[in-house]
Image (cartoon, rainbow, N blue to C red; front, side, top):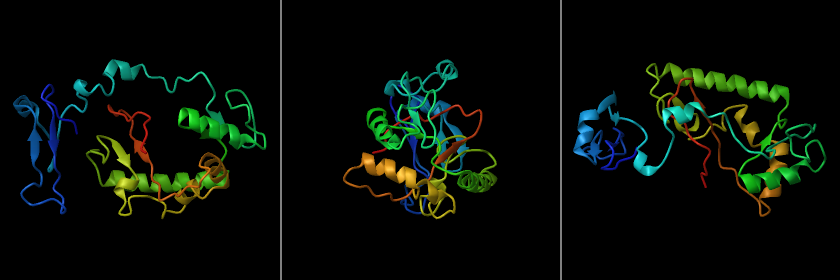
Length: 213
């Protein structure tokens, strides 16, 4: 939550066992004007318009409607077993991971289209449907746990990740992914967990591509 006197914004503290009793469910306002726009969305959460223009974040509704995906002139996808239009030049060659590592370094991401076999994809998709259906059954008002109609798989788990769910572990325990990451992280790397998010249709807020490190 954002809070600034130039916007009708506030910060809240949820009613959690870790919070002192005198602080649970309290809302702290930066501007008295925000009192007029307070909206009760949950017994222990108050919220209003998510974006405050003072911070220069996000887009207007009209700007968001014009979004058409990633606009990058150079290729950012590759594959192990095939090349083709729109893919990195090294796609389908024994050295595909070298160019993929370079893309990861320069763009911050790269898409590996065929890292998984069909059976692995189906297994993961079935598990995703199972978990997301359970999450939604617990949230009939679609409040979300990452904002309205937005959900974090890891945030909904007691372990804060999903690697204990069969199918999810293949995202990290994967030969192609391991080869790519080992090339990029020359000194080695440690994977501590993994989760993922999902967003329902007609969601007014979104999360831009960003750096978590």
